[in-house]
Length: 287
Image (cartoon, rainbow, N blue to C red; front, side):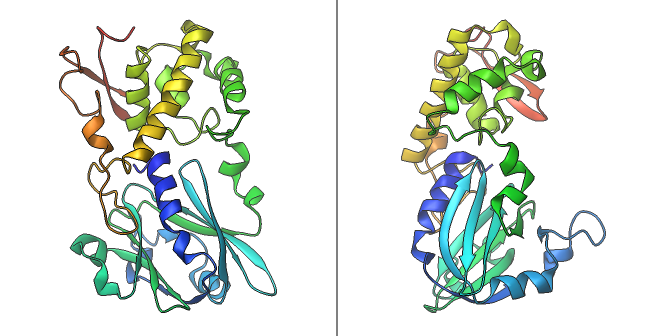
């Protein structure tokens, strides 16, 4: 969390800062307080170099690839890309004053403050500090983007997905693990994987090689369906996801199996750890 729909919603809600100049960058004192001694969290670049590179540049464009946001920053001399991952609990806020952030935890755990030339601030907060920011001259310099499959909205996405699902690398993997791999289809995390598999009537434990092409295509359609439903409902707020304005999503009210005890038909659900995440599924509805 957040997964593709939540990151896409954040991207859309950040539109008001496009064409604004970053006049100053302030970093939290906790940037270095990672889970290992002196491990740099959030900002992965040299901190002074990061501030120097970013300050003074205009936000020219904001995009998304998979679960990553990226900002195209530029001035009259150069452009750079700021890549950002929200981790487990990252959130951006556009505020006129820092005190406008209403929730105490997000205010307490701010990590980066970008001051803008219209007087507003773009604040990145991250309670658990698993998020990240780093700069690149070109997006091609960032290895995850180079490996990432086409977006689900791309006309080549289905063909790529089917080719990868029939590749030797994936044939013996549980199907849930395969669809959570960004080289197959980007942006599918634990929540939307289990929801899509339930709607496709496919057990998450089933090996890819044992699923027909027809059922794999059905699964792709259900993934896109779940993504679009989540976008229409403001994403899923399980604990820490917030919109840029501080709002919560409503997709969690439409879950069929994620964190449920029974499926919509009343059958008891089972759980199993797949791909390091707790997986919910119905052995009656799914096969």
